[in-house]
Image 1 (tube, one colour):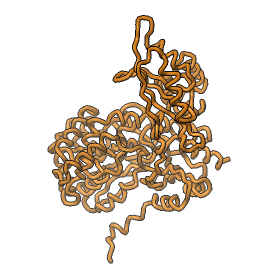
Image 2 (spheres, each protein chain N blue to C red):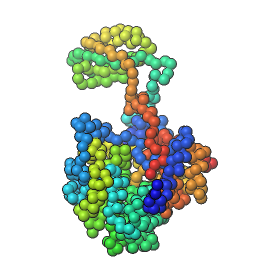
Image 3 (tube, rainbow over the protein chains, first blue to last red):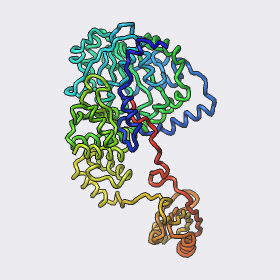
Image 4 (tube, each protein chain N blue to C red):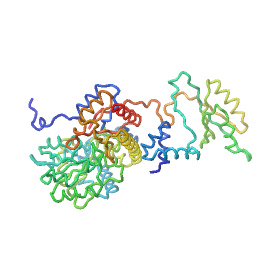
Amino acid sequence: MKISERVNQVPPSGIRRFFELAEEMDDVISLGVGEPDFTAPWSAREAAIDSLERGKTSYTANRGMRELREAIAGRAATEYDLDYDPDEEILVTAGASEAIDAAFRAFCDPGDTVAVAQPSYVSYVPGVVFAGGEPLPVPTREADEFRLTAEVLREAGAEEAEALVYCYPNNPTGATMREEHLEPVAAFAREHDLTVLADEIYADLTYDGDHTSIATLPGMRERTVVFNGFSKAYAMTGLRLGYALAPPEAIQAMNRIHQYGMLSAPTTAQYAALDALEHCSDDVQEMRAQYDRRRRFVLSRFAEMGIECFEATGAFYVFPESPWEDAEAFAEALLEECGVAMVPGDVFGAGGEGHLRVSYATGLNELREAMDRIEAFLE
Amino acid sequence: MNTRAELVSLLRENARYTTVDLARMTGAEEREVESTIEALETEGVIRGYSAVVDWRNTDDEPVRALVECNVTLDRETGYDDIAKRLVGFPEVESLRLVSGEYDFSMTVEADSMGEVSRFVSEKVAPVPEITQTVTHYLMESYKEHGIEFDGDRDDDRLSVSP
């Protein structure tokens, strides 16, 4: 069977190998998990159950249920003072991942360059390749606290790119960008006419103040596609519900792909998401408070162990420097000898070398045990 | 950040968190954590620390009962007076004044059903202001102090994921 060149071009995910290693072992405390350890709020689950009981099992509109799009528009208005038309400027998708994939395919012609801020979520580069585009890695620097800057964009040659994709709060570094950090990036995008694909799936998990969306900056709403969803903040990963906010022509283009590929996002999940937006903000606050405690705990333990780690202020990851020069060897030894799984930073692309992604989406008792094991391993 | 509120919340979650861990989690200095907890104890905000026990996993499971009590009050006797008398019995594990169809909700603990029955009939019922008692034996505990007894759910998330 012939496999397409595009698929052959993309190697299997580096995460896969660590997953397989970890799966073979017993008594593993995994700090390699990219999803909440909480369960989706009961109210949202109940809404999903209720929708099934009432037999709401048909397709919805391609763009998603209107009441959900209205609720999403309401959230954008309340949180960011951004007005999006529920009919023209919002697309509900099967997870933010689907929205991002649709965007790559909607905006890339063969050979088009998409600048990818790195280290980054592992799906961006393959997504660009599958869309026929050319990913251009833009490595961020620890000295800049892994923030995207105009300087690194210039150094990478991003002025030639058609689009820029990034994720803040960031997976895997936990870095966030405030307005003053985003402004030079926005200026760069305006100057070089870049479409900005802003993955804000971790927006609600920001610990150093409010999250800023780049779409709120002057001249940016019209060139930005914002991605968000319910997986991380509402602990609804398995329900696969995300969305995109963008100007009408962008949503129209993405919807053309979505309507043929997916038709519509899962109906049950849309009911859960609607309820989540309407009733679950307290649950989000509570989960964020717990993550924040764990974040401080983990940062503090690494500091005490003498492991360098900048202060991550978002998502549920920290990104310490590897105590060994070879981060992959360290991660492997740690897993094999101590049963603690974390992911080497280079899996997430340029700029991640020599680091480890540590997820604190795990109970405090497990985190303490993991930190004790790491400390003992290093002694 | 309100360190007092944060510490109360954390200690309610797990009273065995060490001062060092509490400092790590709240970002406060260890000394501040110690003095705040001391103040919370002195002020009577924190009244004590206890273990949440799943008795099913022990060989000496006590018999526990929820006892509803109705009382009548007169000019000289208020709820607090009756409560004061009831909390003095070592068999009473908790006592609460509640709204609704009865006045006091009391958890009683003893070695056998007979002991619980005797306690209720010989010690509680004779209290002059108590007009009625209803005893419900606790058959199974599923959750206490916010801790689910069958809550050791296996973490079925992928061990490494994007």
